Length: 298
Image (cartoon, one colour):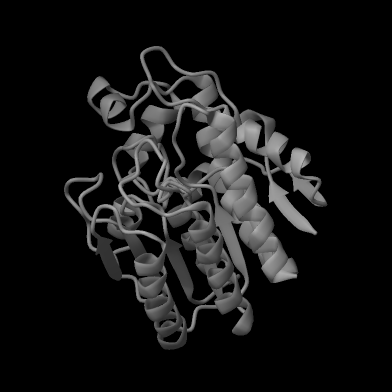
C-alpha cells in the first residue's frame, strides 16, 4: 500500500507574472489514479507557526503570513505570496512531517508536495517559500521521533537552503548530488556535496550514487531518511542539466529504497523539482517515483 500525503490546497492558481505552475500537485494524484496502484491518501494539517519560526526568521514568517513579502524577496521566490500560496506554504511542511510519521509506521510514505530546498532563513528562493525538509527534520528530532536524520537530496539543483539552515548540526546529515553548474550559482555547504558535470547520464550518475550512499548510511547511521526525490535530473527536464533517462530515474529510486530497507531505516519522500511544458508527463514521473519506492519498501 502506498501512503500519500496530499491536500487539495496544495494546488494553487498561478500568480500574476509568475512562470511557476502549481497544478502538477493535483496532476500527480490524477497520475496515481491513472496508474491503478493501490494507494491511501492522508490529509496534512498546517505546520504550527512556532515550528516554522524555529527554522526561519520570525520576521520573514510574519511577512508570509500577512502577505507583505517585499518585492525583492518575491523576485527571489519567483512568484507572489498570495493567500492561497501562503496556505499551501504552511501545509507543505506539515505534509513532510506527516509523511515521516507515516514512514515510521509503514516503512515508506510520500508527501505529494514539498522538497522546498532553496528557502533560506530570512527569505524564500527558487520557487520555495518555507523549507519543509529543514522544518520537519528539526521538529522530528526535537519531539524525540528521531535522533539522526539523513536528508538525501537528489534534485538536479543543490539543496542550498537546507544546507545553510542546518549547518553545524551533528544530528542531521545533508547529502546533495546535483548538477554543479545549475542553480543556485552560489552553492552552500552541505555535509556532503557532489556536483556533477552537465550531461551526466545514467551510468555515471548511478556509479556515484552507489558509491556514496551506502557509505553515508553506514557511517552516519540515520534512523530516518527524508528523500528529496526531484525528477528534474531527467534529460528532458526544462530546468535540468543532467541526462538521466526514465530507466535511470527508476534505478536511482529503487537503489535508494533498497539501501534504506536493508538497514531498516524508514524513508519519507518529497516531490521536489520537475519542469516542462507537458505537465502531465512531469506528474507521471513524480507518480512513478512514489510507486517504485513503495514497491521496494513492501
